[in-house]
Image (tube, rainbow, N blue to C red; front, side):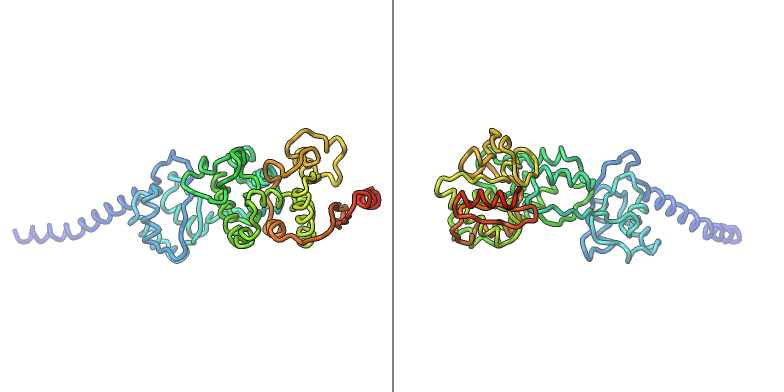
Length: 344
């Protein structure tokens, strides 16, 4: 009897480990499989700087991207990738296996953020076209989002105090701050707009004391800054032209800004035609006095600063030649002479 028991024990000592190993291997294999092979929706998953394997695994499991965080941790350690996981935002789907996700987080198909630069003075339409060219959605979708009159329609959880007090029909034109940004390829128009609005708020805060001292409504400042941005190129000319425009507004003289006409016609004419200046639009400051209903583009900080701190001067007219040089005039006859000399 003792011999049989000894033989049985010997057999079990060989079989049980094999069974346990096989069971563990089967469990490990199953737990590494995709959460859902047919689920191809993209999830933007962010790894924070300094996050360890355990924290990343927990977040992946919570996000529904892996079946089991412990299996993921084991796979990462076995593959030697534990020190290679990168910080950043990744495009992941539930159709990826845990090992495939680990490879992506380690750099194989890792962060693919798109760097986008929007220029001072660009309109929302120009921004939308550029974003589409960079593979960030469609221009139509971006324009639809940027055309809301209440940012809470697209960003219900965010509040931007600088948008308060605007006319009810005002869109987000003028507030999408021009700068260099990095966006995840799957970013929604609302995500892009949120980053631009946050940036605008930061820049506005940097000139808050000047804004308060000016006593001007920030919507008026943004409207005029958007015109100044499209009219002249240097900081000094911006300050000079800002003073001219403020005085024309105070005296009830039409701004007669070519930039506002170009905004209406969607041209980039150095000198609009007479027909262009007669277009019936409230944005046409040749035909209508005062500021246009809204900004004609998204101004940079230098133009906003120029409008807040203009340089006093005695001129009432100005023009810009093809090379960007600005010529000033005190009387209309002198302005006409400058036109004949520099724009013909």
